[in-house]
Image (cartoon, rainbow over all chains, first blue to last red):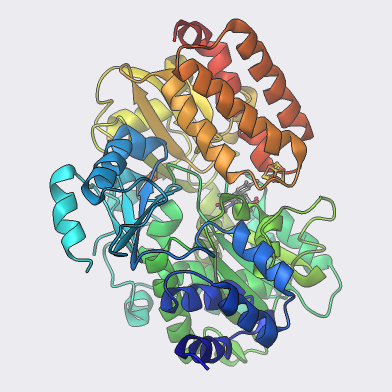
Length: 153
Length: 419
Ligand SMILES: Cc1cc2nc3c(=O)[nH]c(=O)nc-3n(C[C@H](O)[C@H](O)[C@H](O)COP(=O)(O)O)c2cc1C
Ligand code: SF4
Ligand code: FES
């Protein structure tokens, strides 16, 4: 048994339908398994939880934060909504794309970053905002971006 | 403590923001020292029905966008017969421009939890959930810790504070889907399903989570509850104009000189709020979108009306979540609308045709105008689509997302065509 499949089993011990925590468990599994839920992983989840595999796929495909496609070690999410846009959100996304040499939705060759869009991060009073992994960065400016990226190896 | 949101109103006018930035949100003792959980103690000594009466008499209305009277909603569930009832706190805050629920959760988590426990007691729920959007990692961590601390002090758990009332509260994470803010979609999501809205009726207060009577209330709504119980309904109704009692958190975003959050009564006009608290518009005022991406567009003359429920209803608009997103004279309406169109095209859950197809078509039309290829017949089509979506969409997403487009057709048609 691979490390991942053992770990998936471990994480699934917390799953309890009446606690509504399927999402939390999948978030955790995803984080430890290359930022995505592979076919193998989902089969394991289906087997342990008793949730039919097709329903599980339906669930995962519905939610933007869950992915069946492999991602980089760090996920950068750039807010593209109104208030951030006014404050230069799109310019930030473009700059990031250039800096990392990828388009939105792509992963850098070294697997360090995946660049994505996100809906409003509730940080609009300090726009523009981006999110890297679990952390939100507010008032992002071209000057600040370089510094911020350095923190993520 | 950094909430990435400046508080612009004065301490003396605060009810909900009173502790935010003042006490350590990770410390239940700090909350207790500030007078916390006194509302719950008082509620537990009251008959549950009396608690609902107090909330009804206060005139509190939902702060999640739909303004439904909270006490009346609770009565439906209290009166329903069932072996299990639930209360859910809707913390899926996803309406662009809205930051208040995050600030309340990260700045004063116990205030909201206290409100949930009082609500649960009033309606007879023994289990509850806080559904927090997946992007709000800090809110998830803060609320999770606060729940653990409240359990240790027996504000949650079995026989709360020596009473016969048991209540268990859990955090549920979202996965990045705006539509899960709709209460029936949110319920589906907790059940481990795709977050697609249900047909109504039946409504959740009667048939909700796992088929049981369920109350869904917004974070800000529930944060008001401890204060109403502690200070009484009359104290609440005295705040603000008749018919629109209490305080509300408004958010100033976009082209204002000082963006931030404001807690104030409903007698203010949006213009007052922008000028008094936001230090005015950065550039000349063009329009404001109030209440998030599905909110109405306010032109300069509309900005001088007080935001009472009454006046808003007369104007056939709503202030929704309370965000005031200001656009200055340099902003292009087409560009603005394109951003809105893309948001809804992405967030439409696809369950019903008018919204799934409509949001896609609107997005295409806006794109045409962005490239200078739009015609007057495109605008006729836009209007027709919008009216159908308003009538025929299954949930509030498809029904309300056309508001800014219809408003723009009324006020900025010339500018769109000139593009
Ligand atoms: C598409 C859509 C998104 C919504 N998003 C939210 C949200 O993020 N937060 C919220 O409290 N209510 C949201 N609502 C409203 C809820 O369905 C519900 O009316 C509200 O949670 C009730 O709480 P209240 O009465 O305390 O306002 C949304 C509704 C729709 C149709
Ligand atoms: S109106 Fe839109 S979001 Fe709502 S159910 Fe229909 S497709 Fe889904
Ligand atoms: S619009 Fe970007 S954080 Fe709200």
